[in-house]
Image 1 (cartoon, rainbow, N blue to C red):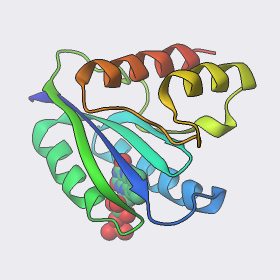
Image 2 (image 1 turned 180 degrees about the horizontal axis):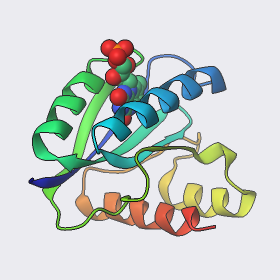
Image 3 (image 1 turned 180 degrees about the vertical axis):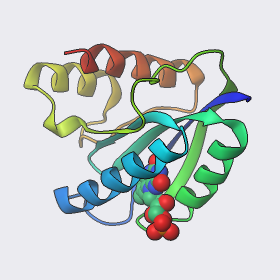
Image 4 (image 1 turned 135 degrees about the vertical axis):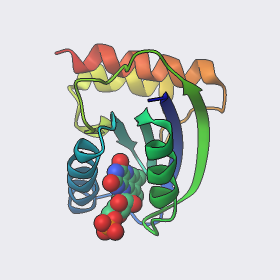
Length: 142
Ligand SMILES: Cc1cc2nc3c(=O)[nH]c(=O)nc-3n(C[C@H](O)[C@H](O)[C@H](O)COP(=O)(O)O)c2cc1C
């Protein structure tokens, strides 16, 4: 199996509320488990950021399907790389709403990765994507 990690961001086509997130998170958690895809789906403001880790062909097909979902648009791939180990191996897929984090964690992540309106902001550089993943990994531990 060729293991890859794909990171993309997108913008919601409607205001992101809990019923919408719950629906997307539930589908992602269930489907990805059956495909041995791990990762994380982050939301803040109108922006989604998702990390998908798994077999190359499986991740490619899944991304093609997700990117056609009318609930979001402007999907941009920030990183697609071969990896030796998963960063989110213990999570089949975990939905994560930054607005729901502890105030302290929320503040530190937002200060680094969100713009003034609370939307996640990362440029296309691999470094900023990896920095965000690292910050989230730290927060997820408690
Ligand atoms: C931001 C976003 C992220 C999504 N992530 C996943 C995912 O990781 N896995 C998944 O199976 N579906 C995900 N979906 C939902 C898919 O686009 C699609 O609705 C899902 O595969 C169900 O398809 P089906 O109704 O044909 O079974 C996501 C949708 C959005 C808007």
